[in-house]
Length: 344
Image (cartoon, rainbow, N blue to C red; front, side, top):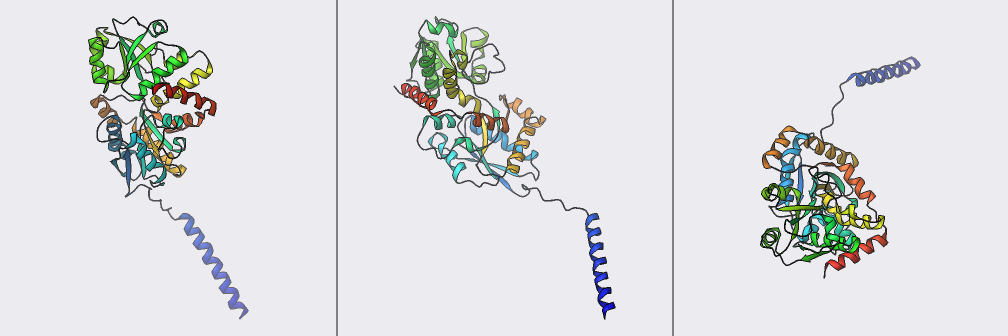
């Protein structure tokens, strides 16, 4: 009986050892890619027109090739409240597993700092995936204006059309913080009517995104009908390395920081973000795929065909900007005071 029990134990040990050896040499079963058989919802905080929609749909066409499992990316337009509706949805409602991300108004962070009502959550807590293009505007003056370069605006009044809230904020901030003499006229419906007003002599200057100005009015540049004065972005446009930025006019560190706050939307541009709480490995997968897409010849060919600007920034660099942009409350209060001036 003792012999039988010993034999059984020995056989069990042999069987266990054999199973361990076979398991070690068996081919490992690869895990299925997370995105296989799934769709990604791309929330676009605008209607089916304009830069946010066009850049969003461009990404939707090309990103799937760079994600394991080749998921569909399905654009879903969610306009409302200047982009706040979509931002709130992404922050509080959307799935936090990597199957939902979006693109919303570039000024959302500035709105948050200035205390614009309606936004829930903290823009800095989004998981930023990447930027396709920045959106730095250029202030330019008609060739007959006394202001030929931005330094002239410290001694000569310049009548500037400011149809949008962003331009009103920027030029009000310059007047308040560095002493320029920009006289704002705000009664224009948009850039098209402002351009007509400038040609008629009703105003002397206005601002447009550099890509828009270069594309829509190349003759103004080639025939020297306008003088470029200033660019609004934190980053310089690659075509304009010698044109000063708003922040270059600051006379001290505080003014520079305040102007950086007002310039922050230009850095965000057309950027994509996922909700807070998405697993780190999923965000890294999306970020890697995003940057690979921006180097893809097929993607670049469509960008060239559409004559789109491209100025990529990685999700990690975007995230670092938001981490760094933790301004003290005293500075935010001063920015809010400047914004109040723009309302009058």
